[in-house]
Image (cartoon, rainbow, N blue to C red; front, top):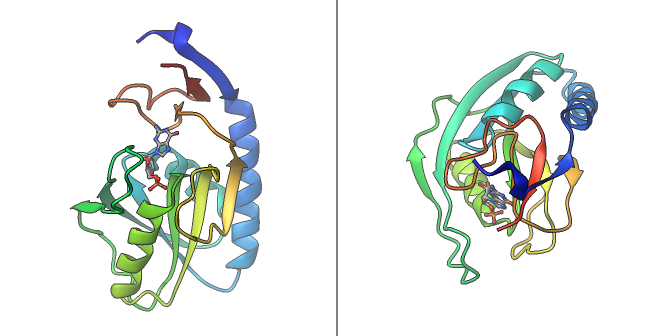
Length: 174
Ligand code: 5GP
């Protein structure tokens, strides 16, 4: 791993603060119920673990394996399920937990999938909201940080499976 190519965008401390704050807002909004948290693998695995512990109302945890269409600008919008959801969400208030929302295509796919599974409500919590390349309208109900641009790694986000373990968010200069 070549650390010299990484420029820190968010420190571990900034991340901890924003996750705690968003967890408090979610806890308030869901104060009368249980949150069925559905994490999109693999990128959301670290955020999911931190967010679940920042939420004070009861939660259930599920993971969905999703392989995105790739990073080409030609947006066919196809995503595929690589691992079926391991939580029954029928009648549940679902919170989709995403690492980053970029074009929105993956999230759109996940929303359709969860509605087809009979979720009572579906909201979205993204760690990073990168709005510049948004190509479909998706509602991000909760976001820890809004980032204008760049390819980011760390805190679950990878480049060719590297960098996921880094505690901060870094801009990867390629
Ligand atoms: P979208 O469908 O919204 O364009 O993005 C889908 C997926 O692409 C995200 O869940 C994430 O896995 C990946 N992605 C988008 N932007 C970035 C980025 O800046 N860095 C990394 N590592 N992955 C990204």
